[in-house]
Structures are given as structure tokens and as C-alpha cells.
Image (tube, rainbow, N blue to C red; front, side):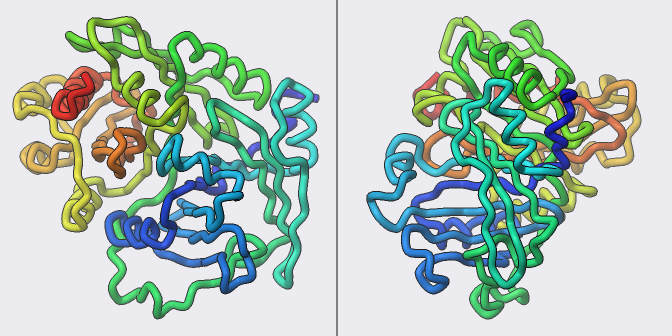
Length: 368
């Protein structure tokens, strides 16, 4: 079979393991503007875990919490804290995808399985990727329920639409993984050889470095360009990099951040700031040099400076981006908001300013 035999369509959903799914759902709803659309738990005859499905635009997050100590992910919370366990990929055929991936060297976690209820048949399987992260293969062509069997539509009164705070988030642009020093190329080869991805771009420690720390990154893409995974590893430097800090506090490799698109980053960031989302800030001097580096853009430079939005360009256009601070006490998972005006880049021109901003946060935590 060809490299494309797995036929990935898109990212179906991202599943998190969290300490308290109900409270996390409240946070993502009120801070990031997600709708809480479905629930699974004791009331739906699920006895071992509770979960909420959240949606905004084409983004689906699933927040799950173990209810008993014998749950297979119970110990994971002690090791990792809240974080991403599964980047689920929608595929044409679950059996074919799983058979191909395991034949090419992937470690299988769940064989192809059919779940059925009155809304149809939901198919899934799962393989292992970096750290304790996994990829589910999902197909819901024959399923018409709210998410999957076991989940029921949430009573609208529990999270009333009249108090929702939508932020204009549309899709997942990319998901970044942090791995140990020396393992980046191994995982790039995994995505190429197992899932048929191609390498899109590479950054070395000359591209991503400051006075104190450095890292290297390669971006792989699949699903006809709809799925993009940058993979980071630390590079040798004077002090501990953000990647090393992440791996230390997370307890191993894992998902560092999720980038979500918007059609108006200014409106989205204003909405998120109103909802008390905290963002990294770069020095004001960054904006003094921006007009010369970027050239004319549609947005008002003063407004971008006020909000802390970064800008970069390539041969195809420009892009705007901003990064939240970590969304839990451990300095691990955070989010990126991105608007693309033609550019397909990942903000190379912003790397130095961004990572210096991250280092300032590390210094405040005493972990630099």
C-alpha cells in the first residue's frame, strides 16, 4: 500500500485527562468561549469516568476525569497533571489505518472497536506516540449522535447559551509536541514512516535561541496538509530551556501547546482578555521595528502593541499570533491564537522575542 493508505482526513478531537472535568469544562467555556455540548458519567451509566465534550467552530475538546483509583489513567494525573492524552485523527477506514500503522512499526493500544447505540456505529482504534500520548483513529460516518456512545447531549440549562462567551476560534492549526533531547528526529521518522506524513519545515538552534537557551524543531504534516505537528527538542545551552522545564514538570514528553485559528485575532484576543485569559508579553521595542520588518498590513500597529500580538511574514503573506501563559499551575500546556493572512509560516521572525518572553516567566518561577 502507499504511504497515504491510512487516509487521515483531519483532527477529530483532542482528549484531555484532568483532575476535575466539570470544573475544567467551566474554565474552557468561560475563559475560551467553548460550548459544552455533551456529558458522560454516572448519570449516563458510565461508572469509571466522567467527561464533557466542548466545541467551538470546528474544534472539539473532550475533558475526562477518572472516578475511581483503579481507572487506567488515575496515576497519570499524579505524574503529568492535567494534559492531553489523545490527538484523535479522523480516518477513512479504522481497520485499515490501524493495520497499516502497526505493520509499519506503531505500538497498538486499542484494536479496532465498534461502539453502537440508537444513533449508529462509532469506530475507533489507538496507537502510541511520544511519551504517554496516543493517536486514536476515528470514523463516525455511520454515527449521528452528539459525540460517541456513552455521551448524552447536555441539558442546556446547565450551561445556558445566554451566558456563553464565544471568542471566534475556528479550527486547530497545529499541535506541538515536546520530546527529550536527541529524540526529535526519531519522532519525525515515526510520523513519516508510520503515518505517511511529510516534513514541512525545520528550525535549528540558530533559528530558535536566546542568550540562555535554545531548542530545535521540525514540523510534519499529513491529511493533505490539514494536520500539522511541530516536534520540539532542547538544544545544549547555558541554562535550562523551556522544553526541559516542560519535560521536568510534565514528567516526560507530551503536548506543549495547541494553536487555534481565528478570522480576527484582534477581536478574539480582546474577548479572551475580557474572559481573564493571561497572555505572554514581549517588550514594547518589538513594535518599534515591526513596520520595517513586516511592511504594510491591514491591522493597526498600535492596537497590536496594546494587545501584545506578534506578526511575521513569508513569501505568501503574513500571520499574527499570540501565546497564552500555561493554563494550569504546572508550566506545561498552553495555547496559541493565530490568524493567517496568506502565510503558512510558524512565526520564525518572532522566535527570539517569544522565547525571551518565556524565559522571563521561567525566571519568575525560578526554573531558568
